Length: 347
Image 1 (cartoon, rainbow, N blue to C red):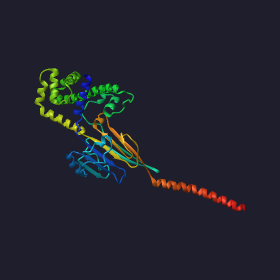
Image 2: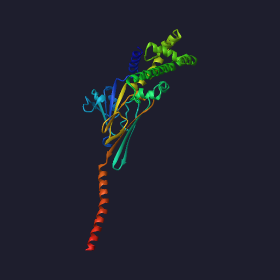
Image 3: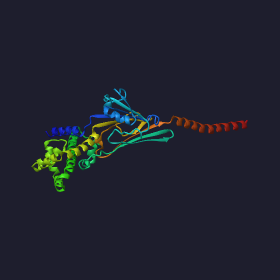
Image 4: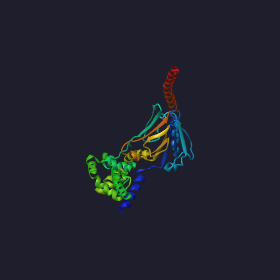
């Protein structure tokens, strides 16, 4: 029964914490850099059209981009309605439509026989009024839960189930504590420091009662009821009713900021010159890489994506071969000529 409850809590968590209902597919093409430094964005929300157009992008109906999508999860993304295209430098084609702004860098290093290209982008940590997640999950647990990294391949599915149950309980505790702390900060201006400190001291006991009643997003009205259930009376509910407009406004401002992060997720594709030789992307082929970017991966810190490609400089190879041929030809030619002169003298 406990396992079923935990699984239900996990489902509710993902439904409430993750409001993603739409996504972008961003495709940057540097395969012929700098001439081909263009970017194409596929999206579904028609309200974004004006935003793109104001930034100088050309927007058109995309239909179904058959042949564009790859295999696996990306191959299923066939429902894009609009396509925005931009030709120009990356500085002009910033990822402005993503709430968490990425800092991008594209470098070209000439190495005579080859030219190396390095793409790098850093997505900053989510700026949310949340409790420090590292106080609830250690680094190993965060890597497993937030990014799917560090899972021991020798662990059986049965063992992994219990490990994930344990991490899930910690994550839910962090989630509830974050809402609790935020609501307490909203009420603190009305209850005074002494009472606010008392609420924070009793946080674990109060949250244990809330968890027993089920998992839910805690709005100010629910927070007031929660405190009344714990302390008795209707003091906090009455306090909320008297200041409803201000408390709800502050809460909604924060809630809107959370939705800016979580209502859309992002598939980020980069096409590189030459052949990919190194990348931290899980999806890649000979000359393109794709990352799945979702803010939950950035709850505990920034996320960096990198790709390195290498292109053979044919002209440099030809020049090198000719140079090597010349270097070999003259000594050999001189040696042959010298040998012929010796033979002619002997006769």
